[in-house]
Length: 587
Image (cartoon, rainbow, N blue to C red; front, side, top):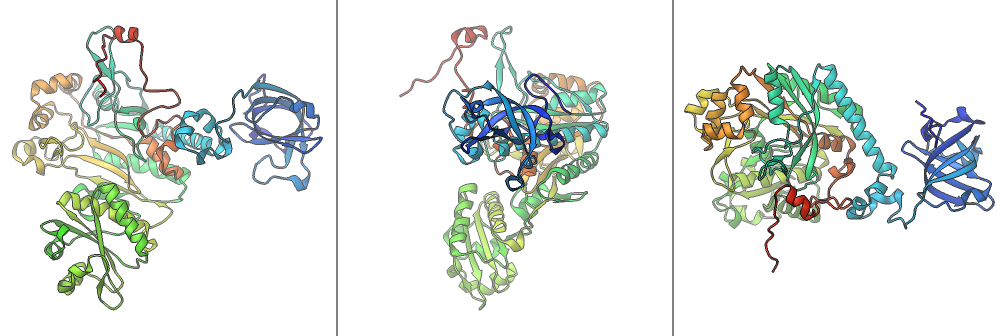
């Protein structure tokens, strides 16, 4: 739709050969200027495309520089055939300028060339993000993100889900990460929190009688950055269904996501419904991760029995995990790099050996295995030419290291990694409880509001560490897209679940007053999930960093270098919210 304004009659993608001979006013930014002596050419860029402007009256170019924002009135002409530019849709036409108006002048030297902004230092890109976004390659990700979100919203609406916006200022609650807290001006010494997720509100909507809810929800967690996680804030496709089971949630997601990936993904092949289902414990034992990349067909083997007492020091008394790779042709340099990368990412050392074409164990730790060669070959099912990657340590550490090793071995073995596709799977049957690494005490493993499998009977009679929950994760290509659960909607079961981790009924009522109160008034069974929008768009776009698909991302240390956040505030603002800063003295 053409939207004529004072500054332009149409956008640059709306100009075509049908306009030849017509007068048009267009606007945008000066991408490039070429002076050919007596005639000048300007590449004009807007959000939608590029159009070549011809200035035969060179006085029109006076005072115009790259990245100035201008409005141009002129006539659309056919280009000479030898000057066609097949790289742009408007490559067969140009606009002969009759008048030019400068709308916005560049007053300072550009910090970088717009066209190559993706190649410069990230801190400089983020500081001048408003310029970085002018780069069509960067802007295309934002347009792509917008289209994906619009499609998700359309699909959810078609399936009968009602979009509801839940509060941003809410009560602090223990949901696994640190809260961002907001001091209250009216209530001295009290704080709001930004929502880590709309978890409680969406469950309260189910109690309210809403049948199917969704929103593209902003979430806030004081977490460190990763390549696939933005610090501070992110968005998720949050959804919840009343009178629903785990199977009902799976059916909705398997209906919504495949069309999204088929329509927008850089790969045209994706898992068909139903997605593979793997228990949490099986995922760790088989793949060394609860986020397995199923494009890689390699699996772990427990080699403790045959290798723990082989005389190699790091294996003594430890669990040993092995990954056998056939058709592995990586050089020694590549193998050393893989081992180094595994140690950096997992904190666990990786080891290796081969069974060569002569049937001999060679390389890596092979000298420690010669006396048990046949036992090793039989246990691991080795064939001539097989490569074996190894990790060792306590069971959990060995599995973690092996999971990372599996990823790198797969990435370096064409025979074992399926390319150009999206492989989905469900991770199910998460433990309800675990022993916390830092506290050494019993804690919730995943989501404290999940329904334990076996209900009250399991909570009263089973070993807590043996209880599974109706919790599930959706994983795609080794990236966790989403977590979800069947909710604990029974207040008696809820109190008992928290009692096991040391929170009594009074504490539950105090921490979750609205939830507990609501569940006492006929709460329906309900279940939900919340796929991460940012991670999804990152996968679809084929980007390695999540910051490439966020309009204004923070840097890796949770700073907005463009806006200068976080920043100090003046004393009056602090007094208004009854806060006094007491920082430790610097040495």
